[in-house]
Length: 312
Image (cartoon, one colour):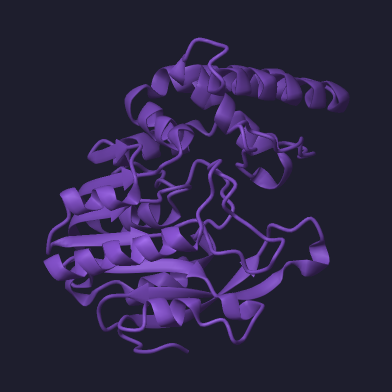
């Protein structure tokens, strides 16, 4: 699946909690059996989101088959549309970009909120489900909203306010072409993370990047799905990791480190006490108060002995 295009694929969405900033740390812990031949027979990412790890792997490894899952139907539809209907999507995005960039600042804000209403009409089924237009609106809103968030309310409607970017790239055609190329060998489905058990085997690498356990009482990155992701879901995910381990799949899992707030919080140490763990350093970018953005710890959990054993 390694791309031969001059432009290598990178995430087409801005994504809260995206792993782009952690790639240089995560890459040190790829299982050795995949590193030497630079090949992965089956790659699974059941919480694909922005796909930073997947797109990085396509630049560095030959992936025979990718299985990209997410429970968010908007994300899944976007990936499928880029893979299958790229030309029509580029046409829609170029139209949105031309109209937006040619508008005044006041007109841009009105245009943004009008498109947010249109997009939510698709979500609430007040409009016909035109998947290409729907995906184009999603990408447009992601590139022009505050902090590039994707967040929905309890009704599942997109509710992020307008962002004041001077010259956002709304239609990145070259990258979309590269993304479409690497997705041709990808199975993309809107399913629960446990679905990976149906096709994973001993030749598989499975990377889990679930909605993070909040690092404070007010912080939560679970707003991209209306029902959230709680501790019971985290425990169910661990059981899936156990089942994957039994069949010989290699598993990597990312999450926030609750010790950022409470040094006595051993939730993940207790849950994954038989797994190998590594502490990573990340920059928390999603906070309305700039003074509260800064370095935090995240954890990497593996079901195999990594090159750097133990929790740092």
